[in-house]
Image (cartoon, rainbow, N blue to C red; front, side, top):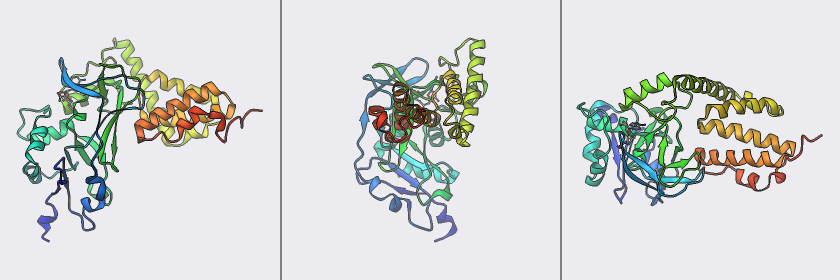
Length: 333
Ligand SMILES: C[S@@+](CC[C@H](N)C(=O)[O-])C[C@H]1O[C@@H](n2cnc3c(N)ncnc32)[C@H](O)[C@@H]1O
């Protein structure tokens, strides 16, 4: 194999032609070989939404029924999965590899840089969501996916939904991070929750060509400054969770509650953070034998674990019967 051919993208299209997987060749097993059955299993799609126009935002996604926190709003196969880093000369091959219906769906998606000549790359940059590293191909960088409907979800700095990629079923899903009413717009955040107002606006303008006027960005200046402080606190708590400091505070309920108050003040959803914090609080209240608080925080941990991982992580059982946990009343003197 010549050196040049090593840098040519390969393409996998399943028999039902439902998507295109572009991948870099690898000296070991090819990516479709590694992924095996998950690529050809028929994917169960779920749909509790409709796509319709939103003034000033193009189109957006709207819930067609009331959706509980943690529940699936949409599950979908991507129409295109590609490496995040594409070589300039490989981009044209992606378009020519697409079956016609995929090409039509792909080029119908929004392009926020319509005057540039790099249409395919710009549509990917406007819409792509992460699908992480691929097994056996980690040294070649992460991949991302473009979805026909999930990519219609607009941004909010205080979103009501979170996106999760599931490699086993080769699908992406949006789940509610709080209760969503029928008819409400479904929003995700294109950015991490701890980023402050000025930087959010700059990033959204540069990458997605819009000025965010979500409820948080529309706050009066003093309230917006307070929200920035809360986001800085969020970032501090996040660092301490990552460093394991938060867990070490486990027996100190007061310290945990102070941390939790900071989080609630941030009025944002950071799924990873809430999972860690709510789970820790649920365990603490179980140890203290305080049922109502144990159930409250176990429910929150369950909802956020569903959004973050697609399973309840064992929290549903704690919600149903906190007194059956092995730490129940272990700290009651
Ligand atoms: C991934 S697409 C979302 C779907 C898009 N609205 C459409 O019509 O297909 C991202 C683009 O949607 C628009 N958009 C997303 N969130 C927005 C918001 N909060 N305000 C205004 N425009 C937004 C911007 O044009 C952005 O480049």
